[in-house]
Every structure is written in C-alpha cells, then in structure tokens.
Length: 291
Image (cartoon, rainbow, N blue to C red; front, side):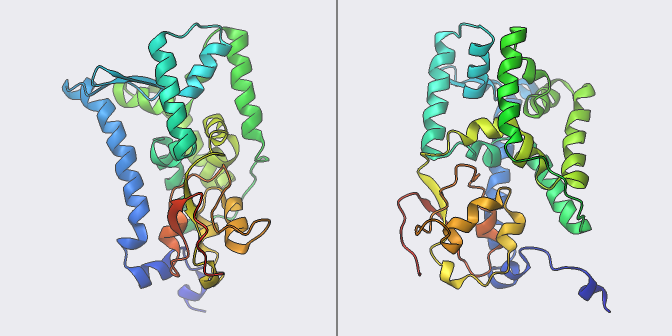
C-alpha cells in the first residue's frame, strides 16, 4: 500500500485544487491580519512610543477619546463589588452593542490571540493524524464561566484574570511571558494530544460568555448552495463548533440556509475548505438557497 493510500486526505485539498491556495485560505489570512493588526495597535505604544491605543483587550482608550471595555471583564468587576468608572460603563456598552450586532464569538476567531495557538494545535493534530479525543461536555464552559464570577464575588478581585490565557498572552507580549507561558503551553498540548477543540470548544469561559451575545447577530455564514454539497465533511473537520453546521447545511430542524447557532465563530473556515463553494459570508435574513 502506498504512503498516499495510508495517509488520509487533509481537509481543504479539493478547495485548493479548485480555487487555488490563496482563495482557499482567504478567510484564514484575513483573520490573521485582524488578530495581528489588533495586537500591533496595542504593542506599538509600549514598544515604540506611538500611543494609538492605550491599555489592553480588557480595557482600552483609542486616540485618547474612544473607551472600550470587555463586557466579560465588566461583569466580573460587578461580581467583585467594584463600582466601574463612567468611561468603563460607556466602553462596555459600546463593545456589547457591537458584538450583539456582529456576533459574540467573532471575538474568538477575529480578535483573541489565543485562537492562533489553538488553531496551530488543530493544524498539527490533523497533520499528525492524532485520534485521541477526550473532551469534557460542551456545557463545561458555562459552568466554568459561572465559576469565574463566583470566584470574583468570593475574592473581591478579578481572580480569573490571573489565569486567563488571553490576559497572559497580552501581558507576556508587553512585559515578558514569565511563568504564564506555561499556561499557554498547557492549552496547546491539551488541544493537540487530549481533546480536539478542547479549550475553545469546551472550556473557555470567555468563549462561553461571548456565545451568549451571538443569538441576535446580523453577520452570519450561510450555505446557499447546499444542494451542491458532496458530503466530503471537510467543513465539519475544520469547524471549531461543527454542531452548528448541520441544521443549515442538511435542513435539520430549520429550512433556512443560514447558520444560526450562537456558538458559530464566523471564522470562515467552512468557506475556505469547501471546494463546492457551498458557503458564503452573509446575514441572518439571507434565505437564498439552491434547495
């Protein structure tokens, strides 16, 4: 038996052959530009003294006039008994409205720096054909989310932020990683060797919080050409929340071709890897379908 016969085809191969490498990676490249660009805005201040954005992903001030506050941090502050400043309240409302309209988990795929770590683990996992998969129940993230708020209430501090991989990554880039790098290494190893999509899909309390903001989102991925689906399963293989695809793609419980699940990260992975061009970025009112 040849080596090619022994090695399973990797997701996206047909898309690359049909669309070309660049088009088959368009949304991935755009997401990386977004993630790295946002990081750069925060880092050019402490690194080069150009202060376009002051602060971090928890709370920031852009051009000395636009406050932005992570609503998850804001809720932790309230649980800890802090009385947020007026600018923090305004900043939280701005971000909250944005994610209610665009989709809460857009944060996970277009902003969060840890996404690059978990994506790397998923990429390597597929290349090495690692089969071991022992994730906790998906609802664990919501229990974890509740636990972070309880911890804030009991301690009177933002206790979770000392372990939050997003906060660790941001602090590390500015001040040096220190011991915090090991938590990021653990996240990578956990996703690589133990649980497919383990951190983002089953544990992360930030992802759980932002999923609660996704129910009303206008920006959606749709499957208008679902009749062209050849059941290659590549979209399911790469999607960080594959359970959200089936209702729209296979008309299970809904006629709409729009992926309506609040856990969808709007990452565009399914658009990239589909050689049949079944998916596209659209809106929640898009009912155009070939079937």
